Image (cartoon, rainbow, N blue to C red; front, side, top):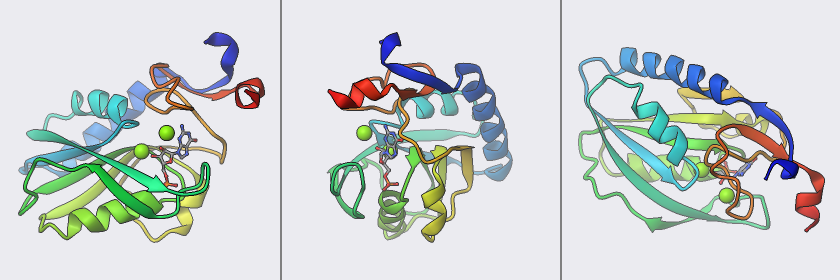
Length: 179
Ligand code: 5GP
Ligand code: MG
Ligand code: MG
C-alpha cells in the first residue's frame, strides 16, 4: 500500500490533536444539552469514532448512508437515502459528522432533510473542507482542516473503496489512477 501513496498531508497526530480541539469547542457549545451525533457512512466512521471519544457532553449516535448522483467524481446535489436514521429528531440537538466537504451539495441537501424533521438544532462537523465548499450557502460550525483542491484518501476516505484504513490523510501516486 505504501507505494500507492504520493504524500502524507495530515498525520495521525495532527488529526488527533485537532479533534481534541473540536471536541472541547463542542463541549462548550452544547453545555447542558444532549447531542445526537449523526455519522454519514462510510467515510465518517473514523472521525466519528475518534471525535465522540473526546466529547464529554452526553450523546447518542446514529448513522445515515446517502448516495449522491453525479458524473464521475463530482456530486450533483441529487441525493438518495440508502440507510435512514433510527432516531426521531423531534426536539433533538443534531450534530452531523462528515469526512469531507467538497462541493457541499450532499451536505446542504442532508442538512435541509434533517431540519425538516423538527429538531431543536442541526450543526455540522467535518474533518476536511475543500475551497469549493465556500461557494455554497452552508454554514459549517466545526472544521478540522481546510485543504487544497486535490483528491485525498485515508482515515475513512476511499478511492474505489480502498485506503479507508490508512490512519492518516494522504494523496495517491498518479499510477494508482492510471489503473
Ligand atoms: P460534495 O461535498 O461534493 O457533495 O461531496 C462530498 C463527498 O464526495 C464526500 O463525502 C466524499 O465521499 C466525496 N469526496 C469529495 N472529495 C473527496 C476526496 O478528496 N477524497 C475522497 N476519497 N472522497 C472525496
Ligand atoms: Mg462523506
Ligand atoms: Mg467515496
